[in-house]
Length: 459
Image (cartoon, rainbow, N blue to C red; front, side, top):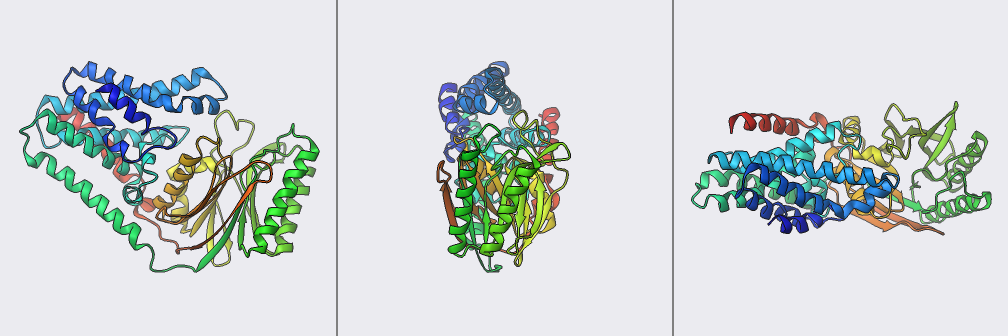
């Protein structure tokens, strides 16, 4: 049973998961766990999860600066999360039959997801909620309950069935409320997605452009200039196609000197003026002896409209950079845009800031790792569902994606090396619509923490 769950978990926690597998993956494990002792149940869960998370081993190795030790440690830590959750559920289910037995497993996961999202230096990255990236009805619950709400919901089916298999004569009063919660949430989510918005700010035409090649400090001058010249050509091409706003990716160049930075920033400003378009781009810029991962935006007159320094830097890989301290917004035509960069959107609290600001959309230049392109793009889209705004994301070594506030994809394409690639999208932008989650945060998640504590001492 544990081995079957390991196979299913492999497709649940991977970088491009199969959404419906997440609903059944824990079932064989829970069924087997309830037939054995609590200690054995924990280690069965640990083994199954460790094998499942091996699907991401290469990604962990790459992002950990090719450290095998760190990659193994990440897998072990995630496997221990399953160890703890299954032991918790085992205790609640096998000690006595109560109405809350079927809730123990989803409550434990929702509580743990809340705590990890609050304390982890990687924010919510790794949450089981992202396994639902291709299934929008269940993701709509994030607008109310955040990621813990999704984790709770997807844990319900396996938990209910496992308890019914454990106690064949269990009363319908035990499982009916859980089934009702699941059905109501999915129905509401499906209706929310299908109805969409009655009001819009009009159709916005955005252009995205990306070249996978990174202009590091070791890149020859000729190659660096080739990349920049190509970006300027793509800005021209998109402007000729009537793009109103053009977004380039994160960290186009790691500038060696302030003079080099000034030269290229002036070129982008001039491109915005010449083609009468808004242009936004990311780069690493030196200032006062420090380096910042910065997003800058120019208006059609070529003047700088605003800038933002990345607040959540990638541990290790961006240790040479200084984090920003405040979120920023910019006005583009009749819409308000929040500014953020890549890893910022691993943190639901970052998206909440813009929900409270009442932005209509968020610009997200990014740099992915190729194999995490899908999960990175969907993670960004979920921030939009949580906060009630559209997301415009231009990534290098990833997917360029435009999504509305329900997570519906208006346009998406892969970035490329060499001459790069572009994406032109017309979409009806909805006005700012702050959500319950945007206003109040992880109320549901912390209630799940309280419920888990109560279950621990009650069950």
